Length: 377
Image (cartoon, rainbow, N blue to C red; front, side, top):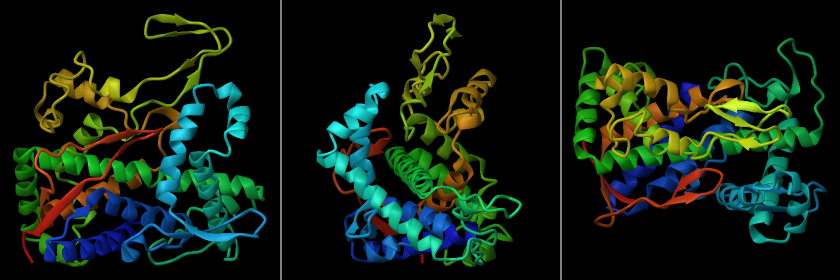
């Protein structure tokens, strides 16, 4: 999968190089959204929407009856709809009713648009062979696993299940990854001492005896082989996920009918329970100075703090419902952030800029206007 991700990083770099040459102010969060959606759509269906080349999020959608086809913005559609769904989700038992009664609201209609986009993607993918292998995806795309099992037997899943599974793939595989990268880049820009230490680590790795060939082999994109062993880089990424997790709430669970003991408290049966990720990540009982972005805590903190970090920092959640794409997300973050930090100087377009956070189901960063300057050719 790395060749596919690296190719998309290369396309991102081409666009950012142009912005640097023009001294142009760009919303870096928007471009990271374009990047992550291009990646997951290509991995899922073998179909690249090419938002990075287009410079906008525009993709085809089609209604279930096939009577209407149109272009839409899947990133905005998903994020707008999650405001609506998160509001209705406070009464899960009533969701089928409240969703029907509010279907005319604009943010509810955005969800219909996102489903129409998934319908279009599924229909286009079903026109291809069930198993499709490419040089970037030698084991095929993700969608083929909805069609055949590991023994090559047909699964025969209903059409709507294919659509809903595709919607989960596209939303979960793009939104939180883009948010994580935006958040961490923002934190690095706000902490110049951390940024400088990271650049020293990257410089030493790139200019080691074997690294130049690795770095130059993919259009200036630093490779995973080169950057994955870098401990401070990983600490910067992990601390970003702790300090500004892309999902601030935990997955919801319901206690069994007989009730359950949770954290020393008896909770009766049929009660919804959740671990709030953001609150847990900022607990002073677990992490000294929890409101400070400090990657050093992952490497140089006390043994107790490092144990707590490994145990209680849960941006991908835990257990059998943990994020299936966490390894892909970390691959993307390693390649994107190492390449951008090594290649550019970043400056906020406005002095004293504070990154807004929009609470939906996910905690999405708002626009992040920056100027870039290339550090070297």
